[in-house]
Length: 176
Image (cartoon, rainbow, N blue to C red):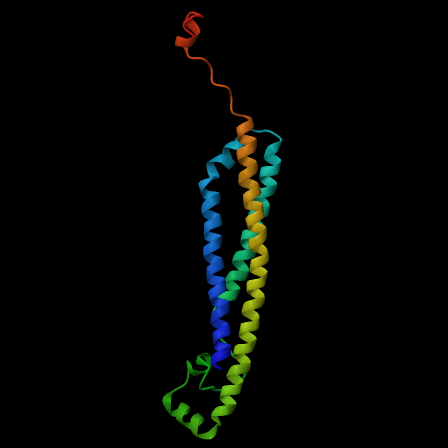
């Protein structure tokens, strides 16, 4: 039972690390938000690419977030019926007397093996959700990098040449 519990915690740890990595990507996007908006404001055909990449970023973020939340959410049900001394969801509405009776009338091994089966299903669900979130995160990384990179390049192409200052235009050619 402890080994299966470790796998559940391992899945939660991996998902938590991925949540932090999503935060890093969002920080990069927010830091470059002005550049992205300024590039769209130029009104060039490149704005269509910015919109498309922004849509991909948004969808991949939402996909990743959904599956991460699914991965780290707590289990609130069990597959067995009745009380299981090792499964907290079955104990929440139980009183002490009922637990004593259950402990007397039921074999501890039956509760333990039921808990092992439930934890195994939980670990499977968490790893499946994590793997789906990981696919979304990969798309988020690629789309975010493309979005920021494209916005920087497209925006840099439209930087107007600075106009000469009045002092420079009135200076004699020898002074220039």
